[in-house]
Length: 168
Image (tube, rainbow, N blue to C red; front, side, top):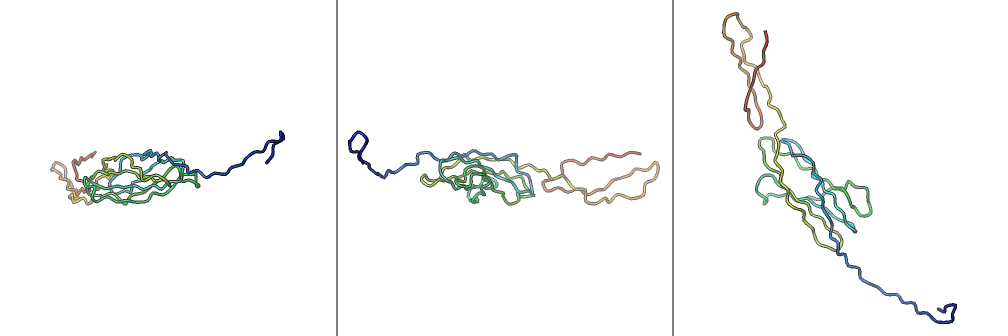
């Protein structure tokens, strides 16, 4: 190529390797405590300058050896890079106990290995009320005599207190 001043220019094409030095950033956006006999949604917001894959590892109780490692579902709006909100819905939590739910997220982009979030542990809440099963009380009551209520009450975790409200 020759410029307007008469000098020749040299054009050069080179290939360069671009290193990805920015790992994914994981932000836990899980809301609320898990509740007995319900599914629970784990939510991570992942940002990166490249496309990412996101997984969640979770377990109930103190034993991490029973952990489940699952791919999360992308719920964001950036379909080219899958950057944004990721969700995973667990199986139902046990109904008859109050185990903790522990979990962490893993994110990987094209060049850097898996990045792990902090482990988070949530206490399970019993949100299922006791159930009045059957009333075995005598259907007849007489004036001046003592009356005894006999009602069966059940609950997954245990009945702590039963109270009666009555009026005449």
